[in-house]
Amino acid sequence: MDYEKVHLSLLMSAMISYLTFVCVSSKATHIVGDRVGWASPGYNSFYENWSKNVTFNVGDVLLFQYNPGLSTVVHVNKDDYDHCTTRNVMQTYFRGNSSITLDHPGEYFFFCSVGKHCEAGQKLQITVSQGNPPSKTS
Ligand SMILES: *[C@@H]1O[C@H](CO)[C@@H](O)[C@H](O)[C@H]1NC(C)=O
Ligand SMILES: *[C@@H]1O[C@H](CO)[C@@H](O)[C@H](O)[C@H]1NC(C)=O
Ligand SMILES: *[C@@H]1O[C@H](CO)[C@@H](O)[C@H](O)[C@H]1NC(C)=O
Image (tube, rainbow, N blue to C red; front, side, top):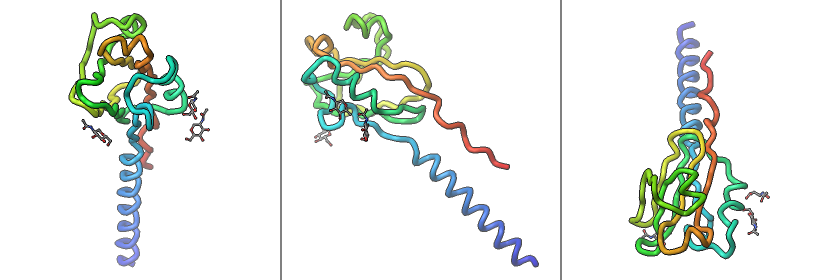
């Protein structure tokens, strides 16, 4: 019966839009440092410890919570990260509460370029995975 077909295709399109919704909504926003936010942490490996317990996938967003003037976020390479130098800055964020979309897999390095904050441990290194490939439609 035609009625059955219509019913089936409605069901199919409902399922497809549901799957699309699930995929889109699985992009996470990670608040860097959770309640501490983006600040000089109490100890040097604070952000390393924080990132250990988080999975970063392409499309996720990092939210650095800070007030302008107190901190910045500079996106650098590993060499600058290791030495707290700013020779190869890819991007600087300073307006406060910066959201950064992780748009490619691989390693990302950030630190705060204010004063000696980087030396004090206000630095973040993460590895971003490709994440789940889009679900196959059969
Ligand atoms: C390390 O991170 C975990 C999970 O985020 C947290 O529960 C723990 O208190 C942290 N350790 C220290 C020493 O801050
Ligand atoms: C990571 O976080 C989850 C949920 O917040 C927690 O249950 C788990 O114990 C944490 N793992 C580590 C290694 O801190
Ligand atoms: C940043 O976000 C926090 C928490 O939502 C908020 O309290 C603060 O006012 C914001 N600061 C700026 C500069 O937007």
